[in-house]
Image 1 (cartoon, rainbow, N blue to C red):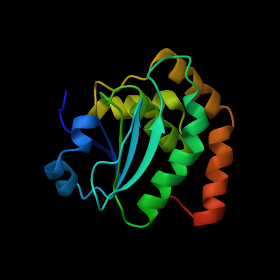
Image 2 (tube, rainbow, N blue to C red):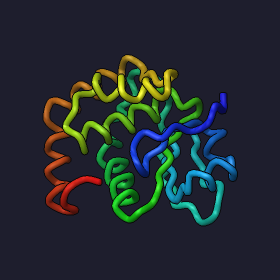
Image 3 (tube, rainbow, N blue to C red):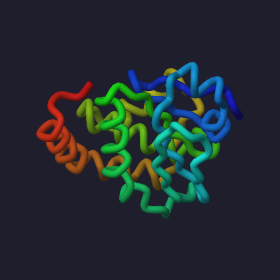
Image 4 (cartoon, rainbow, N blue to C red):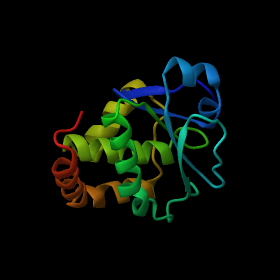
Amino acid sequence: MGNGMTKVLPGLYLGNFIDAKDPDQLGRNKITHIISIHESPQPLLQDITYLRIPVADTPEVPIKKHFKECINFIHCCRLNGGNCLVHCFAGISRSTTIVTAYVMTVTGLGWRDVLEAIKATRPIANPNPGFRQQLEEFGWGSSRKLRRQLEERFGESP
């Protein structure tokens, strides 16, 4: 664990808990915002804006209830020229799920296409089956609705 964070889009990175506390990586990638998604997320560093999402990596957890808050956090960060790291414990399931939901929303792509693109640069990315189901459900309309809301509020996505 600790292979380094992966750049998914300009201003959006995916990683694990080691990446989230590595001052060299955070500085090199100019990380200004962090979403921590695990059982007991805590802010670790000053000068970083945190969003803490206490979620276990089990299929029955309703992670999609956090999609809108996380998507807004990432989007505002990127629009203001910041760089956001989304991490969970291993950088495999929870964080990948949140990043996939964000990319679906801003691009209009389906979850399978987004996940394959993420896996091209981060092969370990692999949401658990329950999270995959929630991404599929999110793609049935919620992602498009949220995309329209973001466009009305902020204009075109970066």
